[in-house]
Structures are given as C-alpha cells and as structure tokens.
Image 1 (cartoon, rainbow, N blue to C red):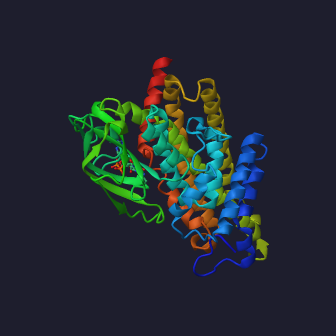
Image 2 (cartoon, protein in one colour):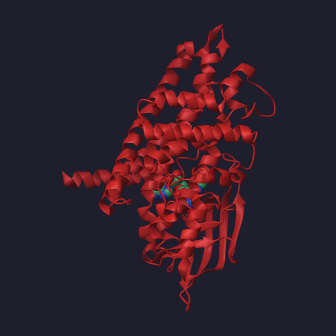
Image 3 (tube, rainbow, N blue to C red):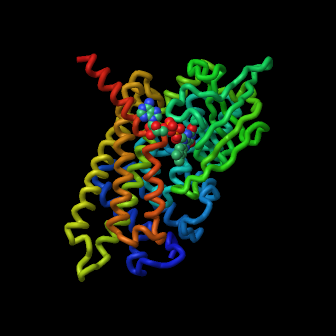
Length: 427
Ligand SMILES: Cc1cc2nc3c(=O)[nH]c(=O)nc-3n(C[C@H](O)[C@H](O)[C@H](O)COP(=O)(O)OP(=O)(O)OC[C@H]3O[C@@H](n4cnc5c(N)ncnc54)[C@H](O)[C@@H]3O)c2cc1C
C-alpha cells in the first residue's frame, strides 16, 4: 500500500488499509457536502483525486523531500487559489478564500508539512500580487511561484526582533544608482534554505519602523547566505537563518521603498492569518479522520472503542469544536470573496482594518483548537497514534507550532484587547 506505514508495522492490515488517504477524504466530504456550494465541493473533490493519484503514482510514504513534488502540484494549480491570476495568463477557477480553504484541506490530508511549506510560498506571492506594478521581472517571478516552478519565503523575524517585528535592525541603504544594500540577519523563515525568491523587510534607520522598505530578493545573488534551522517538530520542512552581507537589490526589485514597508507588511497580515486559520482547521480534520476511522475499528474488551463513552464522547467534543470553527471560517471566507468581487479583486482598506480583530480571534482559537484536537486524537488512538505508521505524528508536531507563527498567542490577545478598548470607546 502507499501512504505512511513506518519502519515497523504496529497497526493491523485491515485498519491501516482503512486509514488510506481516499477513506480519510471520504470522512471529510461527508462532513462538508451539505454546507459547501457545489463549485467549492467539486473543487475539493478534484483536488483530492489529484492527490490520491499522485500518492499512488510516486509510491509516496511521506518520508520524502516534499519540495521535489511542488512543480507537479503547481502544474495542477494547487499552490494557491487566493486569486484568479488572469493577468499572468492563468485562469484559476474557482478562486478566492473559500477555494483556498478547499485547496488547503486537500493538501493537508495528503501531507501536512507540505501544506505548511507551500503556504510560505503563498506569503511571498501575496505582496507581489499587490505590488508588481507590471514590472516584467516581478510578473515573471510571480508566475514561477504560483505555478510551483520556484519556491518562495518571507523574511520578517530577526534573532533579536520576533514579536516586536516593527523595530527591526536589518538595514537597507540607498546607493547612488537607486539600488539598495541590505545588511543584517533574519531567522525562522519557512522555506528559507529552499527558496528561490524571498520577500525581505528592512529599515533605513535601525529600530524605526517608519523607515521600513520591502524588497524582492533572488536568493542566488551574492550576499544572501542561508543555513537550515532544525525544528524537530517539523523535520521535513526547511526553516532558515539568513545572513545578508551587502546584498544589492536593483531598482526593479524594490516593492516598497523605505517608508512604505510597514504599510505593506500590515496590509497582508489578515490574509496571512486567515491562511494559518485554514491550515489549523485542515490539521484538525485530518487528525479527526484518523481517530474516527481507527476508533470505529479498533476493538478492546470485545467492543469497538468508539462505543466506550471514554472514547466516543471526547472525540465527539473535538468533532463539534472543529465543525464550529469550520463554519465560522467559511463565513469569513465567503464574506471576503463577495467583497473582493464587489471591489475588483482587492479588499478596501477600512474593511481590511476591521477584519483585523476577526483574523486575530480566529487565528488564536484555531491554533489552540488544532493543538488540542491533534493531541486528543493521538491519545484516543493509543500506541497507534504515537507510532510512525500514520500521519498522526506529523500532525502532533505541526499543531504545536501554530500558536507561535504569524504572531504569537499573546500578540493576538494584544490585538484583541486593543479591539475591546476601541469598541468600548464607540459605545
Ligand atoms: C516553524 C516556524 C516557522 C516560522 N516561519 C516564519 C516565516 O516564514 N517568516 C518569518 O519572518 N518568521 C517566521 N517565524 C517566526 C515567528 O513569526 C516568530 O517565532 C514569532 O513572531 C515570535 O517571535 P520569537 O520567536 O522571537 O519570540 P519572542 O517574540 O521572543 O516571544 C517569546 C514569548 O514572549 C511573548 N511576548 C513577546 N512580546 C510580548 C508582549 N509584548 N506581551 C506578551 N507576551 C509577549 C511571546 O508571545 C512568546 O510567548 C516562524 C517561526 C516558527 C517557529
């Protein structure tokens, strides 16, 4: 069989066969078929079909370097669905946040670490969509990222500036020919050592966020040096530490000059956080699909363990929480899709601002949810959840870092508390 099975088989043949990608997709589909519009449900199923065939064709056991798969996945139009990309002579249908939700669900069930790695390329895509200004090289790079030909990353965090990202110390100095020289160090960039292209933020005056610029970097340029950071919870994902030494950025690669970078950084945060929300929900469904199939088949004391309240009840709780979060997120995705259509493909500034609190609410709650659901599902599967025969171990690791990335739990709480103050002042 294809799919995970680990070095030593711990789960019996019958249950392992039933934990196939195809069956887990079926579990998801039964849950979603009545709440999705046909165009989104059909897209979900098409994407699933692709991954089932892909797994079989390459005899994948999910120990491989998933970066090698990205070009083929890109050809299928499954790197991002946030936009239609007509201006790149692509014509993705369906597209928008709801379609992105479907794409992520299908991808995560197939391979959670791949889904997260591809998500970081999308983070490099979004600023280029907003700031390509029809410059040839930017359009060319954008197309390569969207079609999976190239890999992207985004460089915000620094060794001494994590949550306090605005006060960065990586500098950008303007040269007489209009180019910039970048100097400094970034850390924890998803895809950092694999990326062909990076979107980098730097300031012309250290610790002054008002002087921030945004730059597109070709990682083959001299002055870009990346080394891999080991994150044991996501061992197949490449996370980097990058050192810039007089890294020269020509004029046409400046997405936002100093003074514009901070605005560019914040304008994309809501979509970035919603992307993480979707990923969190996909992980929770993925874990549930394993645990529900397993608990319906595994017998102890001559009964399927699901029939014991000690297993069936907590599993139902996690199912209910995951479905509730799914419904709330679908609502926001559909709302954004409607507004994007109404406003020609971009969200009006005031609406984007208003969504900040919702993005923080959903991000913080979904991160907590996925951590609990994945752990609880592992726990209810006993040794079968802890061993390496399924994707449960990947899910356990990945769900533990979701409160950190994209703004930590405390930063989301800070944003929400500011929102509460604002609302109070409106009363
Ligand atoms: C796997 C992974 C992938 C990542 N991918 C990327 C990426 O692609 N690009 C990128 O640029 N970055 C990335 N990051 C970095 C991530 O965004 C940062 O780790 C995060 O912003 C926190 O920064 P820090 O690690 O320096 O922690 P710190 O900011 O040092 O925080 C440490 C603790 O202090 C708390 N804290 C800090 N300030 C406050 C405050 N004012 N009030 C209350 N609590 C506070 C934090 O919440 C946290 O609990 C990634 C991180 C990980 C782990």
